[in-house]
Amino acid sequence: MTDTGKDADVIVVGAGPGGSTAAFHLARHGLRVLLLEKTEFPREKVCGDGLTPRAVKQLIKMGIDTTEEKGWLRNRGLRVIGGGIRLELDWPDLASFPDYGLTRTRMDFDQMLATAATEAGAILRTGTNVSGPILDRTGRVVGVTATGPDKEPLEFRAPLVIAADGVSGRFALALGIAKREDRPMGVAVRQYFRSEMRHDDDYLESWLELRSRESGDKLLPGYGWIFGLGDGRVNVGLGVLNSSVAYGKTNYRTLLADWVDNTPAEWGLSDPANAEGKPQGAALPMGFNRVPHYSRGVLLVGDTGGMVNPFNGEGIAYAMESGELAAEIAVQGLARPQGTARERALAHYPAELKARYGGYYRLGNIFVKLIGQPQIMRVATKHGMPHPTLMRFVLKLLANLTDPRGGDAMDRVINAMTRLAPAV
Image 1 (cartoon, rainbow, N blue to C red):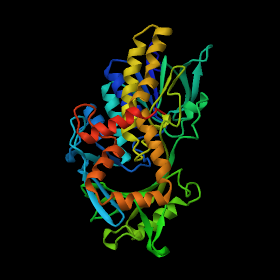
Image 2 (cartoon, helix red, strand yellow):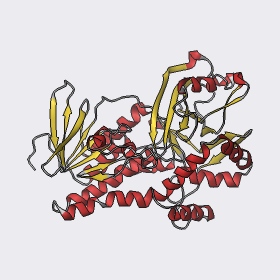
Image 3 (cartoon, one colour):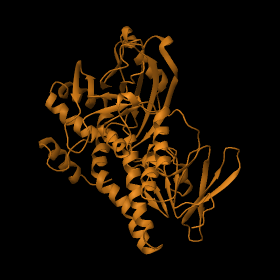
Image 4 (cartoon, rainbow, N blue to C red):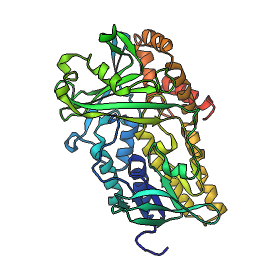
């Protein structure tokens, strides 16, 4: 391949967690990688800013220092509040995953991963907005068109493209790969607040019931969270699933304000003077809501492929895991001659995604439909919360944290459930 400064072995569209992770692993394998990002770093991204042990494992694989000295806040597990009960559940002690989670804002988290990719050898171009694919005469993608920081038209060519451009999936849409309406979708809204009392919490906090005392203790739709960031601030947010009757009919920012206004005064969240920035919202594409994950020289990663966990709304871990897998598959494919042999290797990507997550996401899709019904949610909260052992099982299931081999009885039950469930 001629070195024109624009050509690469793989072009990665989007330098979020999935794209940067893919670029990192590709570069570590010696491939020439071009990582294209439309914005400039640092940049804000709507997110809960909480990382479970699944995501921590990916950070460790990339050699990221996750100590407090580097600005991370560790957490021991999840505090669940619902049905009048407050329950603290530690992350499970597993051989396959770390026993701690982390929080960090996306303002510098994504930049940290992109920097790791460039240090591994990837070429990062920010301010480069990819507008569509370049096709050969067979309809295969052989590059991308883009506009640069000065709006100049650009073209970049490579035999493979990894689309990691987020929930919009613009690159996939340009290829006719639309999202599936029969898969779960959520909406999340979050806002930062200064809170000396809550900012250094060593548990992520999840509220299964959101209530407004001003409306007669009315039960609000969705679930909420309060995640301490360790820097004097907390990330406060809520999510609503499309299985809820309130989905698409609710002003989510007003909903967040209604809940926050009724939190204890000593937390400082109900004081408008403690708010930092306005509430921001984003969609959560779940349960493989965009397929196929490989088509005509393009692999979809993370939110672009609808890989958010339907059980808990977690997206970063699955973006990073799919980024790593896409890199492995790309390395295998590019080692083979162009044609049938290479396509056979690349076709393993969607097959492996389905094997890893298909049954679990099928269960998650069922879960989303069930909790979208308030009466079922109330019964589950009332009768489940008083039983810590059951809730530890639920935590493992919702966070997808089990040992695949040699685990305890809970692990074996969850693993069997995911194997037996038909893949999405």
